[in-house]
Each structure stands twice: as C-alpha cells, then as structure tokens.
Length: 201
Image (tube, rainbow, N blue to C red; front, top):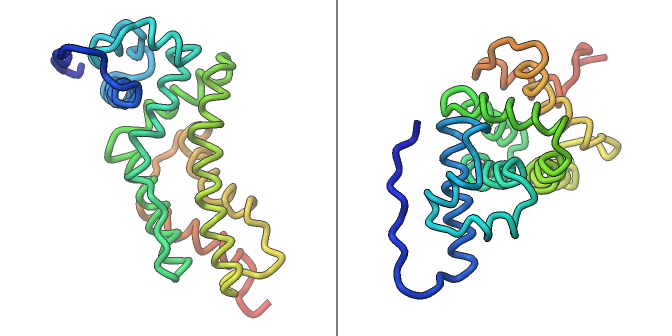
C-alpha cells in the first residue's frame, strides 16, 4: 500500500489547475501502487487534499479518473523520440513501453483498466480519449514524418503499423499472457518495417 500523508491545506482556495494536478498525481500513484480497485473518490480526495465533491464534478466515475491519471503518469516515460532514424526511434519508444509495463509495474494496472473498460462505459471513453487515441496519434505523427522523408512507402498504412507494434504487446500481455521483454522489441519493429518475406522478394 502506498503511504502518503495528505497535503496540508493552506488558507484560501487553490487554483483549479493545481487541484486537478494534485488529484491526478494522487490517483496515478494509488493506481500504480495498489491497483484500480484502490482508486476511489474518498481515498484520492484525502490524499490530494481535495474535496470529494470536486472529483464527482470533474469525473463521472473513479475509473474515468484512473484512466486520465494513468496517461498523466505515463506521459513522460512514453515520450516519442524523433532522431531522424525511424527504426531506432520505434525501438526506443516500444522498448520504453515494454519496460514501463514489466519493470515499472504498470502491467497489472493496465490489465485492470482494459478489463474494467469492457463493463464501464465512462472508463472506456476516458481510456480512449485521454490515453489510447492520443498515444496512437503520437505514433502516427512520427510515422507520417518518416513517410514524408521516404523512410516508409507512400502507400504504407500507418494505422496497421501501430496495430502491429503496440497491439502485439497488448495481445501478448492480455490474451496470451506470455512474458514481454526487451528482446521482442527489435523483432517487432523489424517485422513491422520490413515484413516476413525475403528481403529480395
């Protein structure tokens, strides 16, 4: 369990942006340390030093809050580099994603979020709008730049490439439940970029 002393409230009302940031930080910490069931409005409000009514006003459910908090927690770790070398950038970003799941403990909370999203429409919408679609767009932007530079064919389907890379990780983690490790990253990238046919085919 996470051991966090709730922040003392000073005099006067804090700016809304400050309160929101504190709530997201607290919710993200609870999610990663204790899992999705621990993310309740009561606990988050206490640890963030915020009003529970504020949380009810800003998020339709604790699951929706957890989804947004997950994006806030993962954003810096999962930044998408652009060094001009598409293969190296994909290996770096996908490798960071795999390490985030396996070494930094995000696999359990992510599995819980994806599973709960199948039954909680508020969580499903929040997961899509605050995490899945923005992360996908970051990847598409990097791939589109590589396409403009001639590193990908003009007719390459960028969405399919995204599905091949990150979709494979989710499939292995959620469906097959087989280990994810750094060794698979370069192989996934090479198959997505170069295919399975002989190079001279």
